[in-house]
Image 1 (cartoon, rainbow, N blue to C red):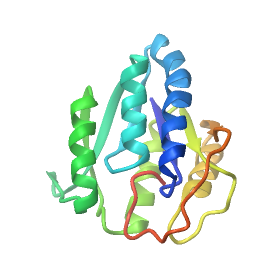
Image 2 (image 1 turned 90 degrees about the vertical axis):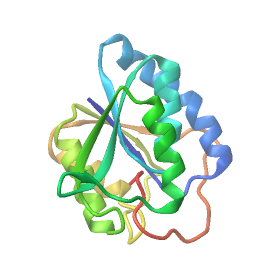
Image 3 (image 1 turned 60 degrees about the vertical axis):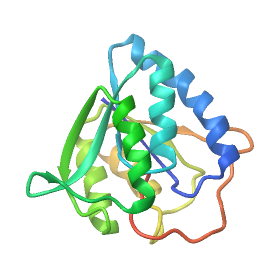
Image 4 (image 1 turned 30 degrees about the horizontal axis):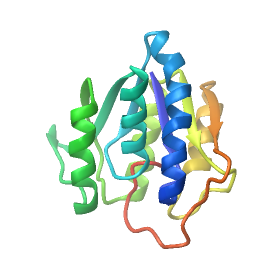
Length: 169
């Protein structure tokens, strides 16, 4: 399984270039019979889903749950989750609160424990209260999971503040 995480505040133009970059990287995993896994949400997870589909790579989408029942996503993530479900070969429920940043980071850690590789859309910046990408890269490396950093030429992040849990890191 290949996990993909990254900055939740990427610009629209970065998403466009990133989709092609990810598609070419994911094609190799598709030929090897692997699958990609993302946590449902807007932004990067949808880009990953589209790239995986274009590359012929199976996609597993993880939905939050409470007591074995799917939990409600933030309004902004619902449409994205619907698209991801259409792109997915499988869906997995995972117990976590999508409104709690620490719970989201814990969910990502549990996902990584079942993966052999991490693709991190990361500019090398440290983790902060909104973005745990650096933490997840260190977590994966500490567990012996191979890490590939993806940062396309011209990639950038927005300056706006993010709210709540993101599904991309």
